[in-house]
Length: 53
Image 1: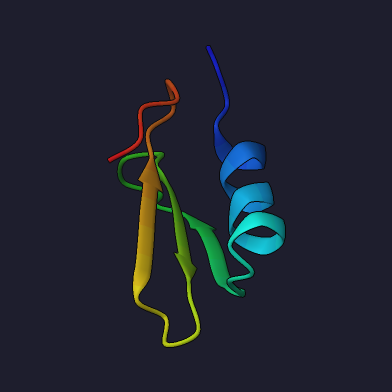
Image 2: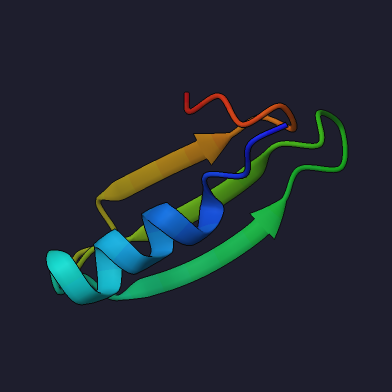
């Protein structure tokens, strides 16, 4: 199982200079949700097996 979370967090903060506002886990699905961007307009969801939705 590959975890893409560190890659996305690194890219958002250091490469594209976007703030990360929220990182949380959806208890129903186990997916990780990341809310980012100056206007909170970037939404990334990562499944437990590493797939980015």
